[in-house]
Image 1: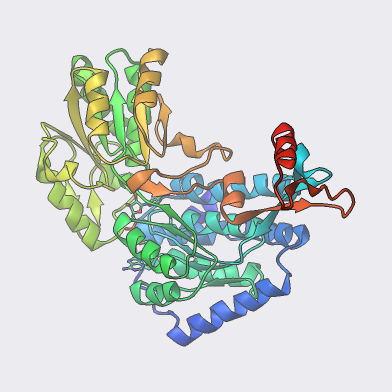
Image 2 (image 1 turned 30 degrees about the horizontal axis):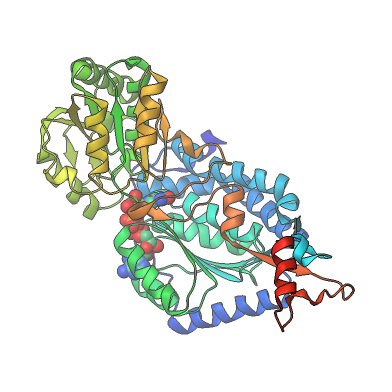
Length: 479
Ligand code: NAD
């Protein structure tokens, strides 16, 4: 499968911006069409949901080569990273949904107190309605398809707006959804700010947005007008703390992989390292060795190294290279949108590279004298999307986890907390709100409707006025 995709992909032929976008009228009509479908009830039964999920799975299985080629065209992403970080992740999640959906959909009966007896208290998971999913460019397939799987599993209709910054994937996603999914319930609207703005003016029952916090605020303000619930999957600077006592061989490999996978354009990539001063030198030396092992002496020639998504981000990242002393890397090539895997030392916490989410292959390494100092450094800043701590001492690592707040993270690894589908994935504070993946995806597109079922018999008069002392005595006794 992978080799097939490799044959199709043309290295470094970047896609051009989308041409096929929707008019305002088409957007309004699409929302109306999906609402009519939802109101018909067709999307509610388990059979419809399972069928759509099977179709989504088939779509990826049958068209993987096409998807991987689009990712190559947008980001110069190799098929292995496309498979690991995009298609395979969605397929794994869909598989779990196919296995578990009937159980998740089941009505649950919970206990009811004596005061309401006889009665049954039930929770009915019901779909929210028509969802809007807005996706970013860095994992342009996965971050459109994975929330869509959640919306379908929960019995919703959905409009997906893929990122215009990854135009080839956006076009392929639109084409494939049309071919494989129920077109009366799923629509893909391609385009950028104009189309998203029109979409956000419509009333949705749920908005699921992945991207930067500035647009997150726009999305939330638009949602507030209709009191539409939102999930915001945002970013931030995810710290990576390396303790004095640590297995450097493994730690450095995992950190380098987490950072340079997708050329650092990963929301949960370690943004910067806080390394204990006693291991700084061996840590850096090992990092240089590992990067060479991964990508060779000239990473630009490596078939496994991704490119920067566009000229704007290339320029932004190139400007950050001056924030410290270049320990390794530093080479840039604007025509090839290439930035070498770069490690910066002597970085001031006030320098530009430490002021914004890097979202590229530049790793500042700062020194700490203790884990307490690392915890203070993290807690003085916005709550990150992920936090990583590496230590041979499980108690010391646990202390860092307990004393900091982040969307999620790993002890002795990076990024891999996204692998277990049962772990809810989301941010906290400025890194986002709400969570998804696996059952959490079902929950995030579902309303848990609580209903108390009562028979007409035994209508105890206790709750009705006049509230006599005698009645109140019984109410208190039964409560
Ligand atoms: P992007 O530029 O593709 O924007 C995201 C979406 O917002 C796109 O669909 C785009 O069309 C839309 N958009 C852009 N400007 C808009 C506007 N003014 N009004 C309405 N819609 C608009 O992607 P990005 O924001 O550059 O993505 C990178 C950011 O996303 C990083 O901060 C990263 O950490 C974060 N991210 C988070 C996750 C996560 O799961 N938490 C995953 C990936 C990326």
